[in-house]
Length: 239
Image (tube, rainbow, N blue to C red; front, side, top):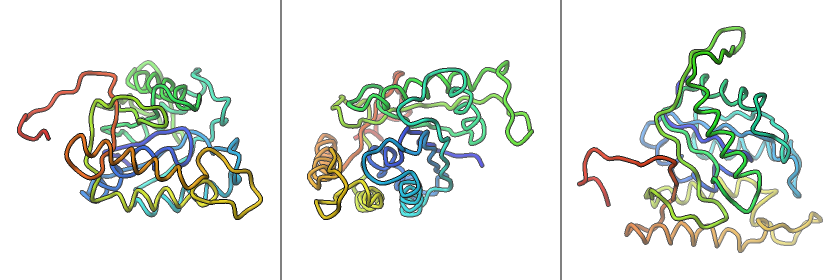
């Protein structure tokens, strides 16, 4: 299945938090969108890998993505090495996305920056014909997406581009709250409270989207960074 947009991030819920509005927007506009999670998030304080896997599928249904896959790399211990680069190369060649969005290049959580570098390097290598890969016994063709963007996650990073998600904020929020083991859970269970389980975390997520939106005179927006200079065909389409 060829995708228009692939969000490839390290933990289940990274895609929803950083790009849930953009995912919902392009699904609504008829684009083929998918999510590939690198790990099961098995080191997370709350929940279990099995619970998070079900929550990820629930969130995928809310967003309406065409596919969601998990590469099952080792949470916290994956490396930017040949083995893990090849796993990502295979996924890129399988889905042949036009655009890839991945984790922030630097963030509070060390997995985010490491995953961003891993995906960045693998995207380049995926276009090299002398790197041979197979999927289900069939040789894969080299492929490199035309654009890569990075999320802005916990650490504030000035965005290179902002995208209006006002119409899709409710879908984004519902997709995040599908992770019932992780977000907005208060103190009504026996599991430890975490940085993201406090209801205030969702308030800060909404405030960030509102701040980005105000910069382009809309209610809510998501911000992304680019490793290359971006160009447009028409200045009159800019906000």
